[in-house]
Amino acid sequence: MRFVILAPLVFGLAACNTADQAAQDTGNAVESTGSAVANAVEEGANSVSEAVTNVAAPTDRDAWVGKWTGVEGTMLTIAKGDGPGRYKLDMQYTLDDKGSFEGTGTDTGIAFRRPDGSQVLRATDGDATGLKYLAGKKDCLTVKTGEGYCRD
Image (cartoon, rainbow, N blue to C red; front, side, top):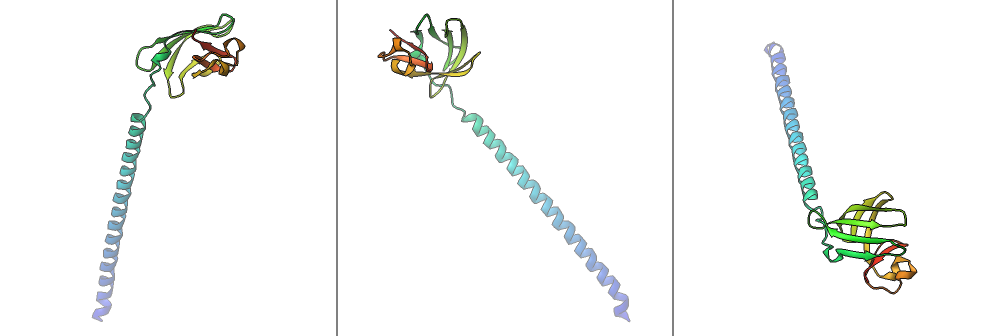
């Protein structure tokens, strides 16, 4: 009879112990998940920081500063810009189109944007310009086939 009276009490205590253990396990899981999330956020922040830090600095294209001559009145003048690897391009790039554009030195040349889109000025020879008048010249810059400038 004592067992019958004590059984609900023992089972009740066991249930409390199980509930306490479940609550503790849940708390541990939440803490563990929170730590994992915090670590992931920190690692992500470090990755973003590294990505920002590892962005390539502009490339020095100072050797290109000066006047360059194209065909049929086209011309290019490159001047140093407001910082290292920054340039100002003054161009007459077609018979009708001219302008000044900000450029940035890159591994492949000087990148800039004008009304006809993003462009890159690259070091080439006269043959690579695709222009007969510039063929055979050695010191040239080409934007695209049919648009190039050389030094005399």
